[in-house]
Amino acid sequence: MASDGVGEEVRNKQVIFRDYVKGFPKESDMYVTASTIKLQVPEGSNGVLVKNLYLSCDPYMRNRMNPSIYASYIDSFNPGSPISGYGVAKVLDSGHPNFKKGDLVWGITGWEEYSLLSATKALFKIQHTDVPLSHYTGILGMPGMTAYAGFYEVCSPKKGEYVFISAASGAVGQLVGQFAKLLGCYVVGSAGSKDKVDMLKNKFGFDEAFNYKEETDLDAALKRYFPEGIDIYFENVGGKMLDAVLLNMRNHCRIAACGMISQYNLEEHEGVHNLMNVITKQARIGGFLVPDYYHKYPQFLELVLPYIKQGKITYVEDIVEGLESGPAALVGLFTGRNVGKQLVVVARE
Image 1: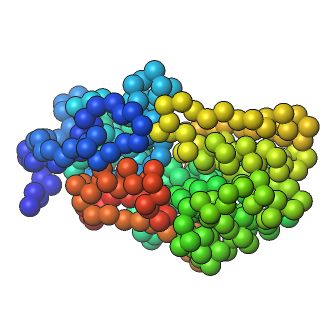
Image 2: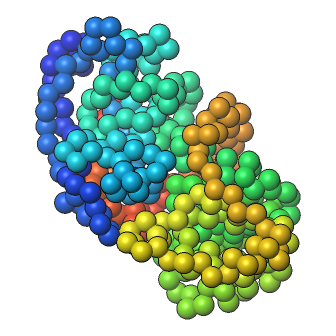
């Protein structure tokens, strides 16, 4: 075992991105290899050298597997280089005044045992360690901030409103539903299996939930659960579900466009047919990117940490062990294999 001694050269296991992907990603689009790394920040650099503990598998990473012309708001992965994403790590050496050896951080890091990070702007120091560190890949990290920004900032929710969430058992959806319930809303979620539907109702306290795979008519399903229509739709899937929601909006409905996972693996995206209802219902569709809201992270922690400690919010994680398990865990997101927030343990300390 390496002793994490600063300055020594150690073996560094990595998950390498093989090449750009068409259609559904496969495990073979990535491979595991090992290189070596010196556990030291180069002289004069203001980067930080970290030991990675937990890595986050998130649907947006599929867009990074496309050539950069499609990646738009985020850089593509480089074929032949390690993939990167959100994670939790421990600082081993630092050339940056804001970070010191021993600090725990979350932010963008490499899918490898050790990473030298030059982009420290999006690294957050972890101050609260009385909750599981893995939570900083989910409820206390990017997905948590996504739920917070999309629900409170984009949707401006009010007590008593009717809220629908697609992909509701995922990293973001499970949290949006609980925020909405705590505010006093009526909440319905869709998911892709009986177990996930049961979890939404019994663990997360949703009023109702349904398995979209068992519904031949999504419009009819939404009319069943929302006879008076939908005030807020938290959009994670796009496609046919979005079209059905557009037929079931109440006046001044707000749609937070967070993700559209049903479209990520299609070479030709599906069209949307019922957009005219946005006019007649005076509805608003708001797309958002979570980094624009990271300045609100302290307020977010003030809201959510007490809820976690009081047991008012619960969070389900789907954890796999070891970097070797990472590729399968990542591609499993797109077939709904995961139950809750998917993450990879690289090391526990």
